[in-house]
Length: 228
Ligand code: 5RP
Image (tube, rainbow, N blue to C red; front, side):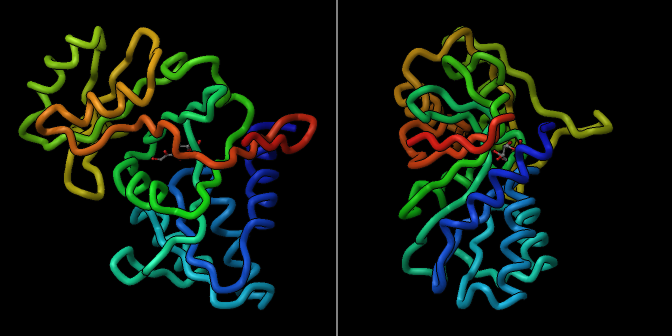
């Protein structure tokens, strides 16, 4: 089984958590994209009723609309039943690094408030400690990117401004901000670092999601493994 097949497998498994009348937070990225498309099919086939998607990005919003998932915005809902999203790293305590898709701020706003936060990954995302493979994406106010990059040296981190595919300009988030990708040596206390990074003036949000995930579905060669 290859990585794409593992992603499809967990996306299919995630559908079992969706019931009629739910508000479902829709994550961003390639794994959640499979979930959104499958969810749309179930809604179109009338296997689910009165399910609304709450997208975490323009990318998720457009895909949901194309796939037949009706969408709502955060200010229209009283409660979020479940949120489904991918991750870039998952540690043994289910702390996450997210934000390769630059949608981390809206993802955290929605996933923090969801009744259940369900994470979908393939087994390559499991790590012993956060920061093992991936940098921490940090969304920053554009005017402050360079001073924040320097201030991150206090944390022994080296940060790079994330550039677009053509490398001719920075990636701009849905909120009009920039992303710094900060490589830390080893993140011993994810919750502490998450709070400390958000205390830097000019930081909008960072990609450490400590103690938020309820369930992680892991696609492995042997099938889906559930961590909780
Ligand atoms: C986007 C994210 C994604 O969920 C994360 O990058 C995983 O993406 P993929 O499923 O494509 O591996 O945090 O901001």
